[in-house]
Length: 489
View 1 (cartoon, rainbow, N blue to C red):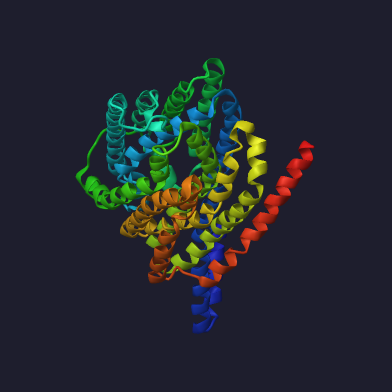
View 2: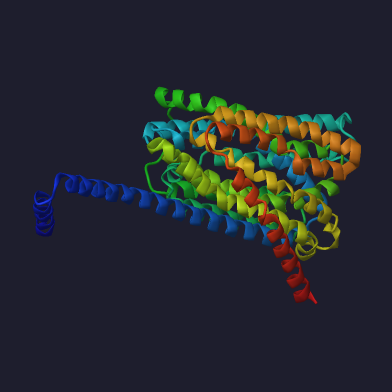
């Protein structure tokens, strides 16, 4: 205390001996110094959140790759195709009824209030029940349809085990619907260390259960039981490990009104998103066999791992950060957005080149000869990374409270996938359909440029410079393939 008073008196004496302009300059310097403290803290919070998010995602993907190496040797390719469609049904129902509870709470000024969080948690649980019910109805419909021969023989939809798998996997939505709203608070505050640890723990349990059951039974049900066990672990840990008060069922009118206001746009946007994201599997499952779809899913998942990492980082870190910038100082949004997007862009473009160059080496290293057909699919799908990054960047419009922009972007992507994919398939066969999947995001990217221009977020120089990362990635991929071949020789 004494040191504080001494310093204060010294400043006062110094100010008394200064001219008026010097005093004004001193005060401005002190204000600038005070403003720099929260900025530094904000940057530190972003870096820490990004570190935990990326580290957790890498660990989870490592576990998935390790389990994939084991499971592809224990189970036949057809099971991966069937499981992909069962998961697609669940995810589709979830997104078709998604009201954006998490992004709504993150960007809302009321998002930290307990009544608001309790209301969001109640809606989350209702949403989980709804997803489960609709999935059960879909399973019954598929069973009846198969009995009447409504789907082509040999297609994924006609597989007799598919309805039961859809019904089994739907149980996870009820369990995860009970996850604590403390997770929302953690994302809002960018304190993601324990959230990441919970996800990692749940993944470890799921992988362990899947591998043990697949080894013992060689059955597709190892996937289903593993998913249920993983959901139970993550839900329990969300209550007992995260700090903060628990949740109770409540529907606060003010909170409900705010959630509905934001959610109506997210609901419409999510409906288009799910169609755009799952249109490939939805259509291909009726045109090809479970084995071919299984190969496609393996190739698609290898590409989607990077897209998933970017999506997780942007939604968990960049979106909350941009929301805070827009709430506190909207004029800083273009510069902060530009700085945040560069690592995503460079990574995606370079990875596209690397994946194209190393596709054959990657498939040969990860899988046995039964999966060699995925090589050409992986090469073609690598080009989707050039456009997928724009889907991440579109989330900036959630951060600034303009979900209508995102809705229109997702509508364009939906129209695109359901137009170019059938056209590609009927003109050029299965390879044409894969090319359509890789490039269907182009119209959406052009529309995003238009929106960015309206908000001062475009940079033509940056867009052109980023393309240089592709040849660098290609060289890196060739080097990786050469080193891999050298190690195996």
